[in-house]
Length: 503
Ligand code: 3PY
Ligand code: MG
Image 1 (tube, protein in one colour):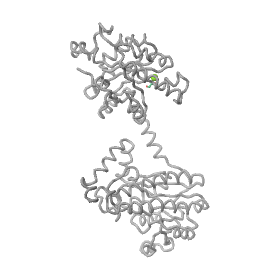
Image 2 (image 1 turned 45 degrees about the vertical axis):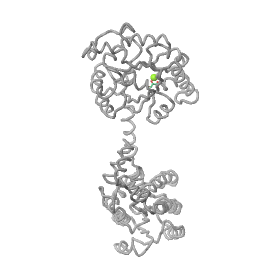
Image 3 (image 1 turned 180 degrees about the vertical axis):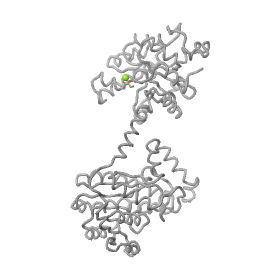
């Protein structure tokens, strides 16, 4: 039996782990499925007891390397977790070389130490286990006080210690920088890394997020934490509640005076009809060509007023703003989709037109109507975005990029318009069945469903809505695994697309 963690360290690699604190063998099993180098069961601050630890290690030990942070540095705490099957050991709060020597004694069988033989898991095959256990085990001691930092070189030199493992939070408290880290903390961290390296040992560090882990790995740390079970549950739960938060206030639809840009299109027409049904007093129907609105406005000529507006033309926008001084609900719906990839013959022209319409056009119209909304009591501004703003669908690459810009713009509009009481809502559907999505063969929703969701979102004063199964699936998928969504969307491309289109 050779411990792959030891091989990785010897080769100068970096061990990536998940950190399990919740005392749930099922949660640990789920985390192990993702294939980390190891899982750390935290007995010091986690909810594990002897039995749940034994069971959890049983569930994961054929998938990953079970590792335990012991309750403390006592012989009993260390012997117990090794008997449960830990193949790597992290011992907290080790301040001196004497304590480090005691850790090695507790962790190794004679003649190297004084660990007592026994335990259910070692006894599965006790002869081979005891023959290899001393060699197999990775022993890491945690450096997490000012004293330990001062003694790091001596601790690293203790035979049998494989790694110094930094506890950044306790260290911050010990050196007085908590809750921040800062330069003093970083200097301490780097001095521990240097001490470990000078002794020919490895250095690891607890990293609460995967982004921190990447930075530390690049600095030469050889053990980092990618994910932490408490945060994996707590953060998405918080995010879901934040996302579902609704506001209160006067109804934004009933008795409103709305302007819908791009009203002659599939979604714009349905939004207009939905506003009409929902009690908007007046709806200005905006289009580049007034004639294209005739059928739509004929339904209720007294309440549906055609307005010429080309969102890429400043004069046209200024005239529309003059003609619509009573607007309380601006719906920026006008948009353009070339439905082409990056290597289509006209890709640069496509990209410019999409940016001009979807991003700059929305910005220009929002700027023109900001004082009108303010004068009329705040009201609401709605931007028709798309879920592809979050993750590019390369089949319509330049369009998706313009929608990403529009999403960013929407966030800034929300912040800027808060003071004047304008509610800003983003609408991010998936594919909608309109003339703009001819080539897309995935699941499409009807424009009417988008319009109904928009009205509902305004009633509830939501910030962003994701109408339809595709959009809500993508949105929650991105929160869990953005890379998986990116790769999934990439798969819609035909395999020879770049070559075929460019060539
Ligand atoms: C610390 O930062 O102190 C830790 O022990 C992290 O688990
Ligand atoms: Mg600690």
